[in-house]
Length: 323
Image (spheres, rainbow, N blue to C red):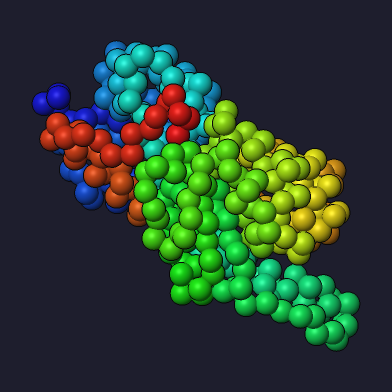
């Protein structure tokens, strides 16, 4: 490792809070931050050690790697690597990600959606708007059979937060042989997705977008859900066949969908999802939290300390698997 400070090129928008927190954790003699912005580009011939990708355009990351072939480590604040995979999939590059940073706010968002569905809050909102008094039948969250597609940090956090409600939870993961997950009664592989969804009241999508998960939630999966069911997508839009979802919504399987991830973002005004019955579209913001910046900065600072000490990095992405 270099005896000089670790030189980090920041690609994207590193917030002032994150920058201050990292600098407080790592003195300048250990880490030198260089922002890839006006007036802050690396000097000619500067040797970099790491690129920190903070939700910038993938193309900007690709340019930075081409300009600095000496870089062997890329850290991204995102939990998924699907948007930068083509840029970083090259010999000698280790990629670490932000898995775990947003698990708490996203899991809370999912529980909020499930509660809103069980308590018919969208129905009440419409009734309020129309000044109509009606008492629809409500449900208890503990009576909803929930399937979570993807049992990474977010899926596990969702399961943990459903335990107090008593909701029976099943999970789907790429390798079901990895063992059980607290709060998840049954774990199966993707081949059994239709079977595990049969009669389910809620389907939560928390899987990474890979070649294997692209379009995995199609007509057969949706038709297997119980009438009146709900789907919550806080992962990636392309996991869902949106045409099949529209058909499923018309048939009541699912009867509702909370979509924080869409195949095209921002969702065009012409998309039929805006007016589909039972749909609530949110702007891919389930991760939002006042604590995001500190968690992101703390994770990167911890990674730098590991690098400087010659210890293995955490959250190393498997480029072959796609996450």
